[in-house]
Image (tube, rainbow, N blue to C red; front, side, top):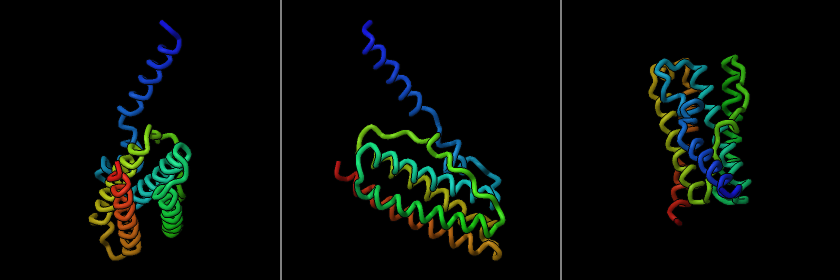
Length: 171
Protein backbone atom coordinates (compact mmCIF):
# COMPACT_ATOMS: atom_id res chain seq x y z
CA UNK A 1 0.00 0.00 0.00
CA UNK A 2 1.15 3.48 -0.77
CA UNK A 3 2.09 5.72 2.19
CA UNK A 4 -0.21 8.52 1.10
CA UNK A 5 -3.20 6.16 1.02
CA UNK A 6 -2.35 4.77 4.47
CA UNK A 7 -2.03 8.30 5.85
CA UNK A 8 -5.38 9.25 4.29
CA UNK A 9 -7.14 6.21 5.77
CA UNK A 10 -5.65 6.81 9.23
CA UNK A 11 -6.58 10.51 9.07
CA UNK A 12 -10.14 9.63 8.08
CA UNK A 13 -10.45 7.16 10.96
CA UNK A 14 -9.12 9.73 13.44
CA UNK A 15 -11.56 12.37 12.20
CA UNK A 16 -14.44 9.86 12.27
CA UNK A 17 -13.54 8.94 15.85
CA UNK A 18 -13.47 12.61 16.90
CA UNK A 19 -16.86 13.29 15.34
CA UNK A 20 -18.48 10.12 16.63
CA UNK A 21 -17.54 10.59 20.30
CA UNK A 22 -20.01 12.59 22.38
CA UNK A 23 -17.32 15.08 23.40
CA UNK A 24 -19.76 17.89 24.07
CA UNK A 25 -21.51 15.78 26.71
CA UNK A 26 -18.42 16.18 28.87
CA UNK A 27 -18.43 19.97 29.02
CA UNK A 28 -20.72 22.97 28.78
CA UNK A 29 -24.33 22.57 27.63
CA UNK A 30 -23.89 18.86 26.93
CA UNK A 31 -22.79 18.19 30.47
CA UNK A 32 -25.52 20.47 31.86
CA UNK A 33 -28.22 18.49 30.06
CA UNK A 34 -27.11 15.33 31.85
CA UNK A 35 -26.94 16.94 35.31
CA UNK A 36 -30.24 16.50 37.13
CA UNK A 37 -29.14 18.10 40.42
CA UNK A 38 -27.99 21.54 39.33
CA UNK A 39 -26.56 23.93 41.91
CA UNK A 40 -25.77 27.61 41.36
CA UNK A 41 -22.09 26.70 41.02
CA UNK A 42 -22.92 23.97 38.48
CA UNK A 43 -25.02 26.36 36.40
CA UNK A 44 -22.31 29.01 36.39
CA UNK A 45 -19.63 26.43 35.54
CA UNK A 46 -21.64 24.95 32.65
CA UNK A 47 -22.54 28.42 31.40
CA UNK A 48 -18.95 29.68 31.29
CA UNK A 49 -17.74 26.39 29.82
CA UNK A 50 -20.28 26.73 27.02
CA UNK A 51 -19.32 30.35 26.39
CA UNK A 52 -15.63 29.35 26.35
CA UNK A 53 -16.53 26.57 23.93
CA UNK A 54 -18.40 28.89 21.59
CA UNK A 55 -15.52 31.37 21.58
CA UNK A 56 -12.96 28.63 20.88
CA UNK A 57 -15.06 27.14 18.07
CA UNK A 58 -15.56 30.51 16.41
CA UNK A 59 -11.86 31.37 16.81
CA UNK A 60 -10.95 28.07 15.13
CA UNK A 61 -13.44 28.69 12.34
CA UNK A 62 -12.00 32.18 11.74
CA UNK A 63 -8.51 30.69 11.84
CA UNK A 64 -9.43 28.21 9.12
CA UNK A 65 -11.76 30.27 6.91
CA UNK A 66 -10.69 33.84 7.65
CA UNK A 67 -12.51 36.61 9.47
CA UNK A 68 -16.10 36.46 8.32
CA UNK A 69 -19.39 37.67 9.66
CA UNK A 70 -21.21 36.57 11.72
CA UNK A 71 -18.34 34.65 13.38
CA UNK A 72 -16.18 37.75 13.82
CA UNK A 73 -19.07 39.67 15.43
CA UNK A 74 -20.31 36.84 17.61
CA UNK A 75 -16.85 36.15 19.01
CA UNK A 76 -16.96 39.66 20.49
CA UNK A 77 -20.30 38.84 22.10
CA UNK A 78 -18.82 35.68 23.61
CA UNK A 79 -16.16 37.84 25.25
CA UNK A 80 -18.91 39.96 26.81
CA UNK A 81 -20.78 36.87 27.98
CA UNK A 82 -17.65 35.52 29.64
CA UNK A 83 -17.11 38.88 31.36
CA UNK A 84 -20.71 38.87 32.66
CA UNK A 85 -20.22 35.37 34.00
CA UNK A 86 -16.92 36.37 35.59
CA UNK A 87 -18.82 39.04 37.53
CA UNK A 88 -21.43 36.45 38.58
CA UNK A 89 -18.71 34.09 39.83
CA UNK A 90 -17.24 36.96 41.85
CA UNK A 91 -20.65 37.93 43.26
CA UNK A 92 -21.21 34.32 44.33
CA UNK A 93 -17.73 34.05 45.89
CA UNK A 94 -16.77 31.29 43.45
CA UNK A 95 -13.56 30.73 41.52
CA UNK A 96 -13.78 31.14 37.76
CA UNK A 97 -12.89 27.86 36.04
CA UNK A 98 -9.99 27.65 33.59
CA UNK A 99 -10.71 27.81 29.87
CA UNK A 100 -10.10 24.29 28.52
CA UNK A 101 -12.43 24.65 25.54
CA UNK A 102 -9.79 23.92 22.92
CA UNK A 103 -9.69 20.34 24.23
CA UNK A 104 -13.33 19.90 23.17
CA UNK A 105 -13.65 21.52 19.75
CA UNK A 106 -13.58 19.93 16.32
CA UNK A 107 -12.97 22.37 13.47
CA UNK A 108 -15.55 21.98 10.68
CA UNK A 109 -14.32 20.92 7.24
CA UNK A 110 -16.29 23.54 5.32
CA UNK A 111 -17.89 26.91 5.86
CA UNK A 112 -21.33 25.30 5.50
CA UNK A 113 -20.43 22.90 8.33
CA UNK A 114 -19.17 25.90 10.32
CA UNK A 115 -22.60 27.54 10.07
CA UNK A 116 -24.25 24.25 11.03
CA UNK A 117 -21.88 24.02 14.01
CA UNK A 118 -22.99 27.50 15.05
CA UNK A 119 -26.67 26.56 14.70
CA UNK A 120 -26.24 23.39 16.74
CA UNK A 121 -24.12 25.07 19.43
CA UNK A 122 -26.60 27.91 19.89
CA UNK A 123 -29.60 25.56 20.05
CA UNK A 124 -27.89 23.58 22.81
CA UNK A 125 -26.88 26.80 24.57
CA UNK A 126 -30.47 28.09 24.49
CA UNK A 127 -31.79 24.80 25.89
CA UNK A 128 -29.26 24.97 28.70
CA UNK A 129 -30.23 28.52 29.67
CA UNK A 130 -33.94 27.70 29.47
CA UNK A 131 -33.36 24.80 31.87
CA UNK A 132 -31.54 27.12 34.27
CA UNK A 133 -34.23 29.82 33.99
CA UNK A 134 -37.00 27.29 34.72
CA UNK A 135 -35.25 25.82 37.75
CA UNK A 136 -36.75 26.28 41.17
CA UNK A 137 -33.37 27.36 42.52
CA UNK A 138 -32.97 30.24 40.05
CA UNK A 139 -36.55 31.35 40.65
CA UNK A 140 -35.90 32.07 44.31
CA UNK A 141 -35.92 35.83 45.02
CA UNK A 142 -32.31 35.82 46.21
CA UNK A 143 -31.23 34.54 42.78
CA UNK A 144 -33.05 37.14 40.67
CA UNK A 145 -29.79 38.64 39.35
CA UNK A 146 -28.66 35.21 38.12
CA UNK A 147 -32.04 34.64 36.48
CA UNK A 148 -31.68 38.00 34.69
CA UNK A 149 -28.17 37.05 33.58
CA UNK A 150 -29.31 33.69 32.20
CA UNK A 151 -32.19 35.39 30.36
CA UNK A 152 -29.74 37.90 28.77
CA UNK A 153 -27.41 35.05 27.76
CA UNK A 154 -30.28 32.99 26.32
CA UNK A 155 -31.59 35.96 24.35
CA UNK A 156 -28.12 36.67 22.96
CA UNK A 157 -27.91 33.04 21.85
CA UNK A 158 -31.26 33.41 20.08
CA UNK A 159 -29.77 36.31 18.10
CA UNK A 160 -26.66 34.26 17.31
CA UNK A 161 -28.84 31.34 16.20
CA UNK A 162 -30.68 33.61 13.78
CA UNK A 163 -27.39 34.84 12.30
CA UNK A 164 -26.07 31.30 11.84
CA UNK A 165 -29.35 30.12 10.28
CA UNK A 166 -29.14 33.04 7.82
CA UNK A 167 -25.57 32.04 6.95
CA UNK A 168 -26.53 28.40 6.53
CA UNK A 169 -29.42 29.37 4.24
CA UNK A 170 -26.88 30.58 1.67
CA UNK A 171 -25.83 26.96 1.03
